[in-house]
Image (cartoon, rainbow, N blue to C red):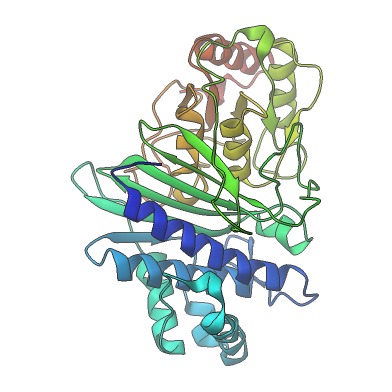
Amino acid sequence: MDSPYAQELQVAIRAVQAAAKISQSVLSADDKGTVEKDDLSPVTIADFAIQALLTATICNGFPDDDFIGEESAADLRDNPLLLNRVWGLLLRLQDDEARSLCKLPQSPEQMCEMIDRCGFGEPGGSESGRVWVFDPIDGTKTFVQREAYAINVALLEGGKQVLSVVGCPTLPANAAGPIDNSTTDPAGQGSIVFAVRGQGTYVRPLFETSGEVVLRKIEPHAASATISDLRAVSCYHMLDSGVDDAHEAIMAKLGMTTKGCDFLAWVLRWVALGLGLANVTVWVYKKRERTGKIWDHAGAMLLFEEVGGKITDIDGKEIDLTAGRKLSGNHGFVAAPKSVHDIVLKTVHEVLREQGKAHLLA
């Protein structure tokens, strides 16, 4: 694939492959070194190690760029045993071929520095230049249960998505919908889904087995879809932040009688949309002050946009990736084919008003 971001794509794919090796080594373990963060969400030793790897690798290749990641190293500095376990995961990669083109931290302290370099990063405004955004493991709750998760790497320029590389260690490259948290690759191989602005969305196996890697370009399936073509991906009864009864009523009003794809991880929802296994999703938070987080969406949304999808919040506003680590300029998400996005958005408003939830609209 010829691309103006060929070097960035190569480095990001190699980093995601090495990160996947880390995640897979922890996935099978009973003790994943899980700790609870201030927002009550879990983080594992794999999250910390992957964020350190991604930051060190991308920083080595592009030292003038900025970085944002989900985690900070505070828990590691406060817990020497946990720190040593994370450092041990990185040491395992020293002789692994998957670390080709990757840069490892040289010490536990440098590892913590790499984690914090992006753990306190901010996207900046439209003049912010190049900013990489990492989610080392999106779907940590399902990862702990040995189910689906994703490794998200995004590049923004001036607050706009230009590159997305998503590692999906549990999903096959030839996945056929509907898929959900329990879906696994029978071959145990996994996949990488990636996109470059203006050049489409692609899927490939997670690792090269032999010979040339086979890329599959996803057809722009959302470019001309109609209401009767809609297939949903959502997250039913797995998170307490969303309005499940509204989500279900919206889909029913749009004519969808089956649940479709169902994922806890937001990145995997964008993957399902990008691959054409679904083409619509809606998310309404229970409170207006609840917002998305940049690492759950940046880059991964490009996968759907590059096949003809349109993404706004429930007020119809474009998603603002310059607002901060939290997407404070937006409330919720409405993603659908461009051709029917207005109809889906109108349906969201109708259902919320019918259910007495008009206060959730601007």
